[in-house]
Amino acid sequence: MQGFVKCALVALLLVAAWPAAAADQDHARAAVQAGEALPLNQVLARLRGSYPGRLIDADLRREGNRWIYRIRLLDEGGTERRLTVDARNAGVLSVREGGRR
Image 1 (tube, one colour):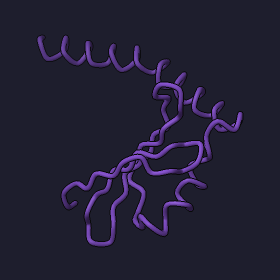
Image 2 (cartoon, one colour):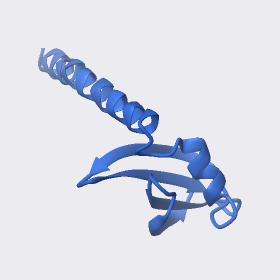
Image 3 (cartoon, helix red, strand yellow):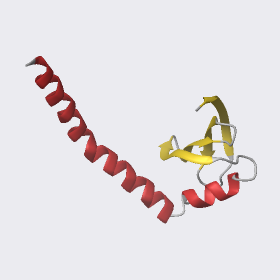
C-alpha cells in the first residue's frame, strides 16, 4: 500500500509541474520571437568553431535581466562540456568540463 501512495504522490507532483514547464517554454519562445534571445540553432552555429561536439541538452531561461542558454555538449573524446551562454549575442559566460560519458 505504501508503494501505491508513493507512486500516486510522484504522479501528482509531475502533473502539477506540467503547467509551469509549459509556461517556461512559452516565455522562452516569446523571447526568441521578440528578438531578446537568438534561436538555439544560431547560438550553436556560433559556438561550433570553439566548442565542437554533439548537443546533449539545452535550456533557455531568464536570469536577472537577461536570457541565458545552458548548453551541454559531448566532444569526440567523450568529455562533457557545460556552457552558460548569453542568449542575446551567443557570448560564452562560463564553461565547465565534466567527466567522460
